[in-house]
Image (cartoon, rainbow, N blue to C red; front, side, top):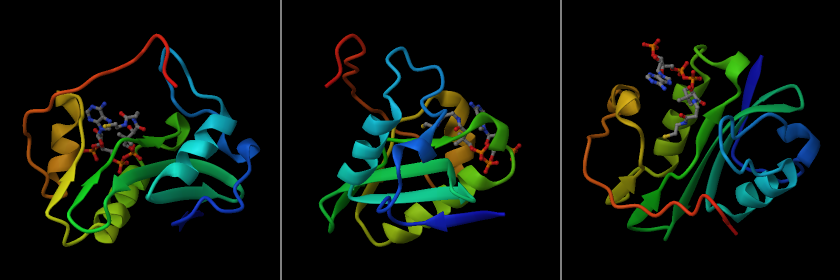
Length: 131
Ligand SMILES: CC(C)(COP(=O)(O)OP(=O)(O)OC[C@H]1O[C@@H](n2cnc3c(N)ncnc32)[C@H](O)[C@@H]1OP(=O)(O)O)[C@@H](O)C(=O)NCCC(=O)NCCS
């Protein structure tokens, strides 16, 4: 059974194995935990003690929020977990003037289900030497 939690408090790096699939510079689990704890909002999906999915948001708490990360472990995909993470995060951010994220064109349909619209983004990706 999958449970959802809105805090990474008490989560240990060992519970965060297998994420950042396909990234050239994959953050280790300890870094992942720092990222979760440094985010303004987080929703975790857990099966027992294991984190199997997560979503983060960075926000000023009033007007704007940005969703940088969403991932479900490969063997847990296609079961509605990603959708539930997005649903719970958007509920948390409800009422903000802007809620933005950047995604590949293939995922536009996925996010459109939640009322999100395609737009233009400008980005920097420091692939070689991220902090
Ligand atoms: C995107 C992601 C979080 C979805 O998680 P999930 O638990 O499988 O999501 P759900 O089961 O709720 O929904 C799956 C739906 O998303 C669609 N989807 C997921 N990834 C997709 C992709 N790369 N291209 C097109 N559609 C995709 C599936 O087709 C599926 O649609 P369906 O219900 O019509 O079959 C997951 O595929 C993932 O972690 N991908 C790698 C990281 C990533 O791309 N994150 C998003 C960054 S913007």
